[in-house]
Amino acid sequence: MKVMVVGGGGREHAVVWKIAQSPLVDRIVCAPGNPGIARHADTFSVAADDIDGLVDLAVREKVDLVVVGPELPLVLGIADRLEEKGILVCGPSREAAMLEGSKAFTKEILKKYGIPTAEFRIFDDYEEAKEYILSHSLPVVVKADGLAAGKGVGVCETFEDALDFLKKVMVDRVFGDAGKRVVIEECLFGEEASYIVFTDGEKIVPMPTSQDHKRIGDGDTGPNTGGMGAYSPAPVVTPEVEKKIQEKIFYPLLEGMRKEGKPFKGILYGGLMIKDGEPYVLEFNVRFGDPEAQPLVVRMKNDIVPILVDCAKGKLTDHVLEIDERASVCVVMSSGGYPGPYEKGFPITGLDEAEAMEDVVVFQAGTKLEDGRLVTWGGRVLGVTALGSSIREAIERAYQAVEKITWEGAYYRKDIGHRALAREGG
Ligand code: AMP
Ligand code: GLY
Image (cartoon, rainbow, N blue to C red; front, side, top):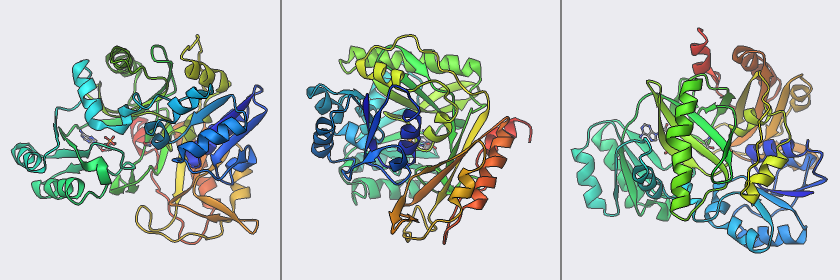
């Protein structure tokens, strides 16, 4: 069969790499892709938000299945458009993608179906939001309702910071219309984890647990990024916690979405806070995590394609994921300056050497081929991913690989996996 993947980052390289191992697949098409993806797929320079262009491409290339990496095309309704053309798509409808497209929508659903999450209020009016913030306890969390590339959340320690963030969102509109409405909520404390499942709207096939590192600096300091690294499994999610995540969060949510007439199919990602063994929802994403997909796919032993097809058909049969018992870690290497302004076009060296290491896979994100040379072309450039018999070994191997690679201004966090290590007792 022919499979098309939408997107061109590290997550999409990981998904394409995994799909390429399937004996069921004879061709992969990817838009827009990147040089890493182009090793396994025919890439086309159609942007991930060009819905008409992507639908045309899928029709023209006669693909049997489309897998959507980023949230934006899903929120723009690509799944509905592809289905109109009779093409299977592993991803939710526009209405179900609201679980990521609108934080207010999600909070209302969570409340209606009794799913644990932070206490909240929703505001369309700036003055009312201001007044509410001043009556709130600290810290207080302010969230732009719509898509803001992971930057629309302010966890504010002071009223000054909270009002400042609110003004940026609602008045200055730094995230555009995403800031017409805000959610103001209680701050939750605990440890975060990502729980990602395949679902047909009713059944779930959970992927292994994982955790990402959103801040740019070691020790979780500095501004938020798209994600500077991730690892799997996340020891904070014990079997008991996992049972609660499924029974108190995922099943009631999927049932609620069906009752609302917005059944969700595809890949559902719960961003969770685990406090005293109880899981709370911070957010939902309607797709794989980036960079969580990278350490997840290297642990997945079975063919991913039959599961993607079943999700797309809305009919998951009894899949049991075979998971490599080893741990995996992905260290993201980024351009110097990211998540602020950065320069691009620097030649990348040492990649072959890193890739020659056993149990190491380097996924590409912001890269470009220029006169046959691989150069940096984005904020997050590479996701250096390794397996190890323990989380410690996986971390060591990933960093050994990272140290072989360089370019001018290359940056990476030195402490990916630190929480898991602490739980292992050092
Ligand atoms: P979100 O996009 O809603 O997941 O928010 C991005 C990040 O902000 C999360 O990964 C958390 O680190 C943090 N965050 C969001 N909501 C809360 C909350 N209610 N309490 C504490 N931290 C939060
Ligand atoms: N790793 C966070 C995300 O994919 O949204």
